[in-house]
Length: 413
Picture (cartoon, rainbow, N blue to C red):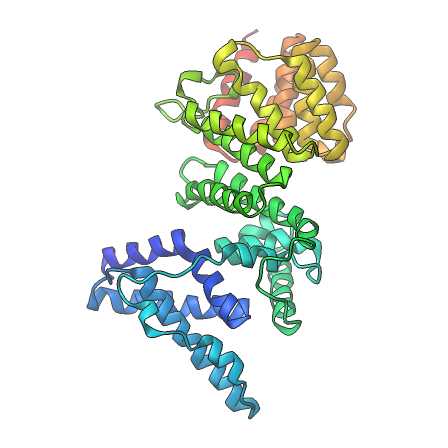
C-alpha cells in the first residue's frame, strides 16, 4: 500500500472525523448510518488512493464518497420497505459541487454535541456518545475510560444512536430557553475531550495531542454562541490555563516535570493572559460554578509566573468551594496538597486519611501525594509502600520514572 495514501487517510481521520460525521449525521438524521458511510469511505480511500493518487482535498473526497454511500443505503431501505420518503432523499441530495476540489463544508459539530446531550438520551451516555461520534473513539477506549466492558459500552452506544434516529431527535442547537438545561452535559464532554488530549502518554498514538486543541476550539464555539454563560467561559479559561503550561510538562529529554518544579519561563504568556481575561468575564456574570472555580485554582498557580510564590491559603479556600459544588476525588486530593503547603504535611495527610478507601484505591495522584507527605514526615516504610502503589497505577512511563526516582531517594534516607 502506498505510504502517502495511507498517511493521507489517517490524517483525515485524525483531524476531520468529527466534522465529517457531524455534517453527514445532521443531514441524514442517523448517526450510525453516517458513521458506517464514513467508514466505507475511508476503506475506499485506502483501496483507490494508492492507484489513483491522493486527491487535492482528501476531506472533500471522503465527504462525497460517504454521502453517496448514505444515499444508496437510504434508497435500499426504501426499496426493501416499499416506502418512498422523498423528504429524506431531498435532504441527502446535496449538490455535487460540495465534494469538488476547493469546496468547503460547514462545521456541524456543535449541533451534534447538543443532539447527543438531548434529555431523551440517558445522562450517563452523553459524554461517551459525544466522544465516539465527534472524535471517533471506539467502544474499547470509551469503556476503559468509564470502567465499563467494551461489549457493554458498544451495545449502549448502539442503542443511544438508534434512539436518536427513531425518536427523531433534532440535530440543532436548542433555543435559548432550553440551552442551559443541556449545557452541562456538553461542557462535561468537552472537558473529557480535553483531558484525553492532556494525558499525552510517552510512546502512545500521537492523535490525542490534537484533542486538546479540538476541545478548546469547541469551547470557543460555545462561548461565541453563549457569551453570557459563565460556566462556558470558566471551562475555556480552565483549559487555556492548563494548555499554557504544556511546554513545561516535559524536560528536553522527555522526563516528567511536576507543576511545582516547572520552569515558568516556558509557560505561554499570551495564553495565560487570555485565560485571565476570560475568567474575569465569567466572574462579571456573578454566577459561580465548578469550572470557574477550577479555573481560579489554575489562575493562582499561574500567578507564580509574576509573584514567584503561591497563595496556598487561598487555594485551600477555593478547593473548599469546589468540593461543595463538585465533590470529586481529585478535588479532595488537591485540597489535601494545598493544606499540606498552607498548614503542615501532617494536616494534609489527615485530609487524605479521611477519604474513603474504596474511592482512592486506584487513584494514582492520591498515592503519589500520600507517599510524598509520608516521606516529609519521616515515615519511610509507609512512604515506600505508597510510592510502590503509585508507580503501579501510573500509565505514563515518564511519570513512572519520576516516582521511581522519588522512591529511590526515600530508600536512601
